[in-house]
Image (cartoon, rainbow, N blue to C red):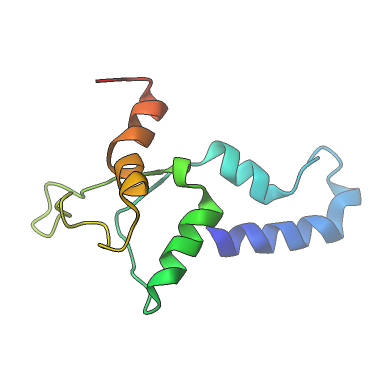
Length: 105
């Protein structure tokens, strides 16, 4: 999604006269209206790049997805890389979905 947002922003900057109703960069619309799930998660060679992507998307816009019932589903205990901050892990595994669906424990 980050690459798509960057490309749309670049095109929007060039074509603003043709689309005056689009008042903000497209990447802002993506961040405001899209939620992303962790399945499938591609882990980059440089572990910091995953955090960079999550930072760009917005930690509050990512929810856990197990891909159950497929045989190779993601176990929540092992689905996120171990170097992810515990607060971010909790947000992805529970809090973001609770906020999205308006539920609490």
